[in-house]
Image (tube, rainbow, N blue to C red):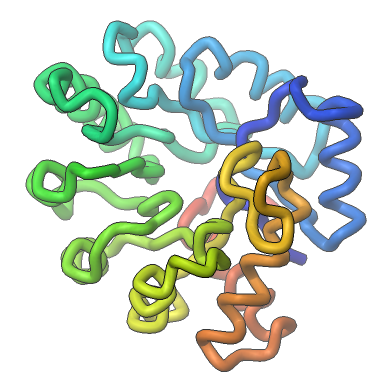
Length: 250
């Protein structure tokens, strides 16, 4: 089965979260990792995971929420929960708010230290912030570059530091040849896949609300550029995800 390693489960889906989870399972996407961006979503995400045996959670504060205090949300009680398998999504995003660079870095570094203290992997968001991301993410940390679309230079640096890379629906886009070329170079044992639902719906669903079942479309494209049978890729991605997130018990 496939694992969607990064999705945002909300009640905005038609039919609700249960319908989305059921649809994923029917399409051989048997495990979902629910990431948080707004810290107020952490408890709702955990409540979903508690009632489904195939849902796990990563808890973090996206750089959009620079006024939030990590210590209030990433507590020992939260991070020691067996359903919480990582810290994320966290990182830097200068696309819309370059003027908050200082505050974003402060928030990012605080969360990285919390993750390091708990020996937990991190799910990294980086957009138009490659230099700062490279300088901050030393080999003290481990985790995954979420929805990776950055340069091969950043990929090579983070490969050397032990990170994994997550392919999203963007890999399927017609104008994403550079992204595909980067994933050709990334070793297959360092790749996982995600939807980032409800965003980034893959071809042939572009323009629609993305949901975890669609991760299979990304897998098909990834299998093609890696010259692998889809069944072989499925097994490789499954094992990669378990290594990335060792708290997952399947």
